[in-house]
Image 1: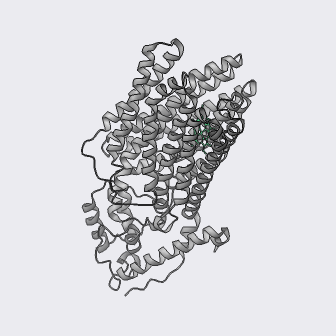
Image 2: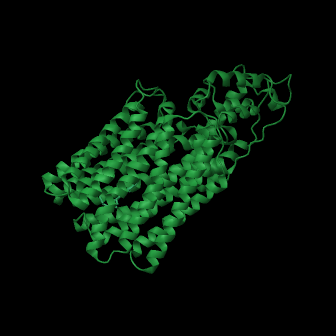
Image 3: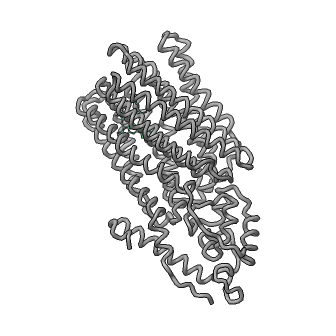
Amino acid sequence: MEIASDGQNDRRSVTKVMAGVERILQSCKKMGPCEGKTGKAEESLRMKEITASTSIREILQACPSARRIFDKHGLHGCGGENGPAESLEFFASVHEADLGAILRDLNAEMQKPQQEPYVYQESLADYIYRRFFKWGIAIMLSLGGMWGVISLLQISLRKELLQPDLLPAIHAHAHAMIFGWVGLFVMGFAYQSFPRFKVTTLWRPRLANLTLYLMLCGILTRAAADVLQHGAAALALGSLSVIVELTAISLFILIILKTSARSLAPHNPYETLILSALAWFLIQAVFSGLFFFAQATAGSPEQTIFRIALLDAPLRDMQLFGFAALIIAGVSQRFVPVVYGLGKPEHDHQRLIFWLMNGSLVLDIASYMTLFMTGSRIAGFFLEAAYVLMPVWAVLLVIQLRVFKQPTQTDRSWKFIRAAYVWLLIAMVMMPLLMPYSAIEGEAFSHAFWGAHRHAFTVGFVSMMILGVSSRVVPILAGIDSKQLSSLWGPFVLLNAGCAGRVVLQVLTESFPGVAYPLIGLTGVIELSALAWWGVGLWHVMNLAKTHRASVLKAPIPIEAH
Ligand code: HEM
């Protein structure tokens, strides 16, 4: 078998998948195929009755024409040809479909299947997410991760957090992580899930595909421009990067809006969070270009430092609290409670969360820039007010999602989701403490404290959510039962340990530099190992979906009709 030569892991995955397939086929044998499958109407056995707990795969095995009913409710290619291993009840809850109505339709189809055979065909819109996810992993581990780890090791060796000669690499690292890691995962997930959430199909999949290559071109040219810093080549590459990234993001937003316009599904408050995240995605891309040109055209090292100090914090806050946090908040409302069976909150705070998230961010940016330019005490007061509002929205979001309630549907990904929200609370509680802490340390802004907060947010919250959501979604899309896959405890423990070490040690660089600096470099290596461990696993699952799984499942296995 082709996959067997790929290595030990693939062999184990295939064995597990084969075992799963065998179990499904055994259960199908007991139920017997529907008439449409055998063509022997009188002789064939029928599945007695489909219930809420019957898996979609069992239903499709017994009655392939039932796929039309699932497609009507948004299945479209999920789980590949054989469908996902999840139950019908899970499907109905995730797609917000009427379980009773689907059950009626399916049982009617079982009794009298349509004569026209269903021909399964995977389209670009069904597998586009794999390209985005794979490139996201590749950029996070290479440009993003390697640059982050090397910079941290240099900080550790030279025992100094603020080193001007490290700034180009740190900015290239941040750009690759925001646009390549977070951006590509968000785009891939949106192209795959948004049409299904809205019970419609993706508008212009080929155009969506083009946005991947535009983003990649932008990320690579910006990395080169950041490293070159000044001169004609840096300006040319920087300009190209800004143009293609803005084009990619504008097209992405257009595709999502056009897809939404095709849908007849009612508007839901979570979509407002997503729309504002998309607006911040575009705004931050414009600001990121400004940030680059402000540095590239600075006339002296002092001017460079001044411009970075003015623009860096607002840019990172737009990227992290505007784009990343809002998109995660929006997707979480739609995804987390239904997927993990957390139920509905007693009070719906979605609108309040929306206003607090956007309001605190606008106040933060405006007051920070005013404070920086004028030194006004009033601006300082408003900045602290913005920081105080941040843990408020984080707590409300956690209450809204009921993340600390006992879930009725657990999965290997659940620990990542819960940990992500713990990290969100830690990161946001640090915000109002930033100015008092800086004052105690005798600084305007403590870079150590600020950087520690940012790492809690970027790795603890944002990256942990990406790991959790994709570890739940990708096996479903690949048609693989996630219970047969690795529990992911290894990468989970390592990532949390690395992140906790970094956050604590970065704060301690001010009071205990002799202990904190030698150890802090190690935390980056631990985190990158965790991300690589997880990334290789997810890549394998995507490969199983792409080629091997289909051929494994298509192997002729006799099904006896009783
Ligand atoms: C492998 C794990 C990572 C390592 C070792 C790492 C390392 C670093 C280092 C050394 C800095 C500069 C120090 C500082 O300003 O505090 C930094 C800054 C930054 N990192 Fe990371 N990082 C990692 C993951 C991430 C991720 C996943 C993201 C985004 C989701 C991210 C986004 C940023 C941002 C936005 C900055 C600020 C850049 C600036 O000051 O302009 N990092 N990172």
